[in-house]
Image (cartoon, rainbow, N blue to C red; front, side, top):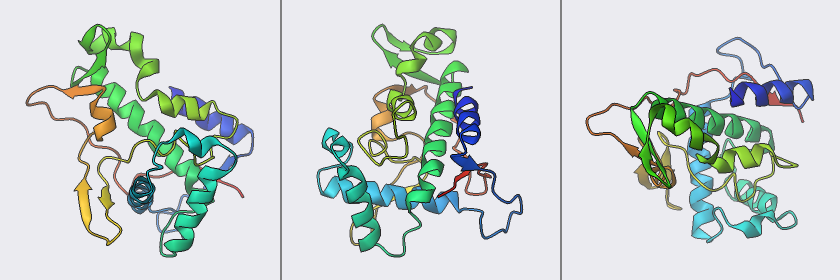
Length: 203
């Protein structure tokens, strides 16, 4: 699978390392909180009309916004070292959604209409393609256009005042443009906050 290949390559390059296997280890990240905080960051970016904007890829602008958010939100779990976790969770999200489509639990919107099962595999590279493009970029840890395009489902997105605006259940609005869930079909949830993370970037 794409995720395994990317993880393997990153480990070989020394970009990532295996964390402690102890569940209660201080090194074990709270992935659910990280995703919630990432959604909060994207809300903040959206308030500045910069969420998913191509301008973020010019110079170091994307990272500058990311550092400014962290400065303004000292309690956030976000930092440069958790970006590999964000990337891995996006890859897992894409794989899960694709699997649901292959199993006929959901459909993918394509130029020939909504498809699922084997027919969808022909269009797999275009599904949430921003994730694949980011992984192939020169610096996939850069907080630019592709990493800020869509929030995580199953996590909460808040206003600047801390009020929960929306809690994404399965698909984000951006993903819904490419997916139509079949009627009365239960779609698998994304990994829970207890899902172990196999890799953290060494700084």
